[in-house]
Length: 473
Image 1: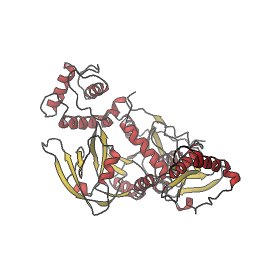
Image 2: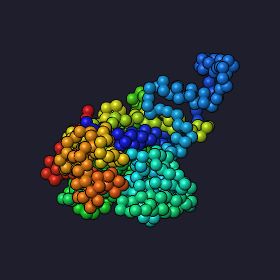
Image 3: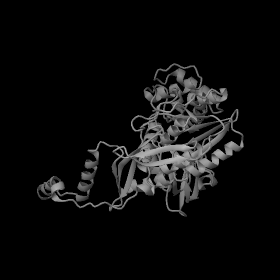
Image 4: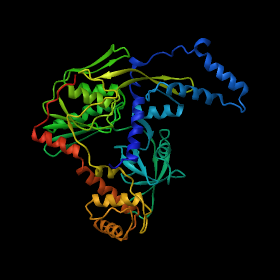
């Protein structure tokens, strides 16, 4: 099966950040600094090795590096991927992610094949006012060329203090010369809730993560959809890595019928907290889309909706991460995140390492993921390898008759020319920027139609045959 590669990397990074975010802002789990002084009996071995190295090691020691290495080694021994030390830079990035606010120009970017592309422009942002568009290729930020740079490095260049200016140069499909604009950075909030009305009065509401504004944005989006006269709702939690659990609870209090949303239990199984909803049942059927990257707070919401009998789960088994992390700020500006509890669904299902099983399992076809792959570049007749094979797969998915050979032969060249001509481009057989952008747009449009999970959800709601949800016991 086709691997998602760069798309998967982005999702997994978000998952790690999200797990770090769990209950970051929940006062209940913040506590004063613990007593850190230990007697020699408890830490004697550590100090014995420390002194031997300090006095006898053949090279000078970086004691700060030794301390951090010791802490990281101690945490690794717990065999808990969600317990870790965060250096000061990681803490700063975490705060940007978890609060959902940052100072920048207002774009989401992606990368591949050495390029950095605008994936989405945030509404009412400086970038939107400056005229940036999805698909624009960022070639320079300030005096730094972006060719070959990592996406996160470019993101750091675009961010900066509120009120400061940054010059961005970009190339746009159909434009001969690069466009250069000066943009004043502003304090921004990351959008996590997206809604639209589908054919047949079916509402589609996607939550990409749970940040500080998600609950409020969800309430507003759902209210707008309901005013349009919903006959059914699809809640898309696929590839949602979780985030701030308080925001998941806020969503649950709106959409989960009166009763329990989730409970928190400690290592002894004792219930430390229950979160409840008082909302009335929705007067329309609801389907929740999940997949293998739906995790943490997303699993809490999906599990509560299914256990309540309000919703049917469609897709693939979820990730299975439902532990509670506490974040302790440390004296070096970093932080220690460590696990203190776990979540259960209202029916008592332990999500951790188990996840949620969909009521209706539906896989996505391998071709669906082509829209997330970087478009090959710098290919010509006679080239061979994976990039050529990827290009051939893309053209075949778009409906062109072509054999997958992994060789850029005359058939591949002619097919590429046919695609260019159909897109209103010169049929030169060259993978220039305009051709790559047209391929990306065509794959995105075709990919929507290949979303078998979304199709299954729509069919359930349209046919009125939503499965009855049986609480897990």
